[in-house]
Image 1 (spheres, one colour):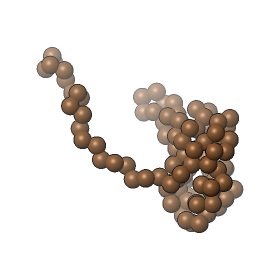
Image 2: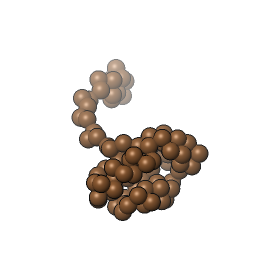
Image 3: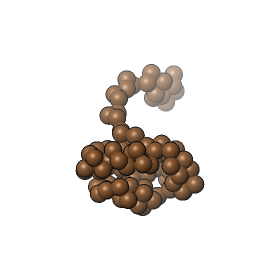
Image 4: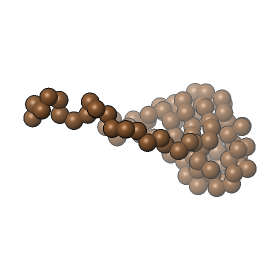
Length: 96
């Protein structure tokens, strides 16, 4: 099961996520999402747990708990919605 972890401290690392979730079962992967331009945390991450029962127990136990100084939000990750292209992207007024 893929788990979304929001409201992460900007100091939180992949290892912090893994350690918190491993207390509740096996963790396949844990990653804090980083901004591709600045290299800094975007304040959320994902944890993958292969056992659904362990994953649900982890969600229940860790939601609204403290991790690296912030109260995190934990829930099952939803599939990313497809978005239409934005009209305001690309060259403006063909000034190239």
